[in-house]
Amino acid sequence: MAGFKIEHYVVGPIATNCYFLINEETGEAVIVDPGAAAKPLSEKLTEGGHTPAAILLTHGHFDHADAVEGLLSIYSDRQLPVYAYEGERDTLEDPAINLSGGMTGSQKVYHATDYLKDGEVFTAAGFSVKTIFTPGHTPGGCCYYLEKEGICFTGDTLFCGS
Image 1 (tube, rainbow, N blue to C red):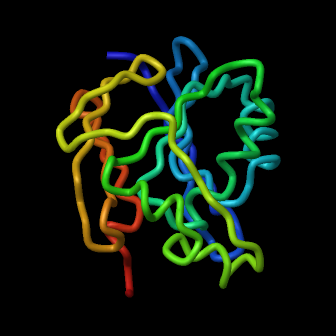
Image 2 (cartoon, rainbow, N blue to C red):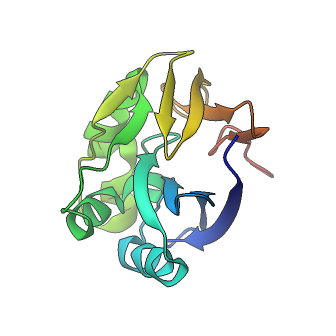
């Protein structure tokens, strides 16, 4: 099991929780729900000496996905995979569903590079990550479970006070 640490940042106009899952041996970081903060998050990665390895989206609302394009542009020298559950494609690609038009003032379309199935396991930054389909907040929301590390990134599946 790789040594790891988790860094938490509150980003964007509606205070979205973003996480870096950092492999302490390699310095690679998995970015979970980057919100609307591509430049500040890239600065945090640089300050920490971390290299982004993947972006995980728990769902496709703008407040979780808006920084994806900016991060891909900043790190255009590498091919960062962007993961989302297969049932979330419509949310990502439809501004009426991803809420970008009403909340940001401009309608946006988001994309993942890898659409995952329920139970599918993939590797990011040396971590084994299992996709767990958790519809409710959105039709294709998911959680990312790292069994060995005892971590589960839930996005808005668990939504305190709402």
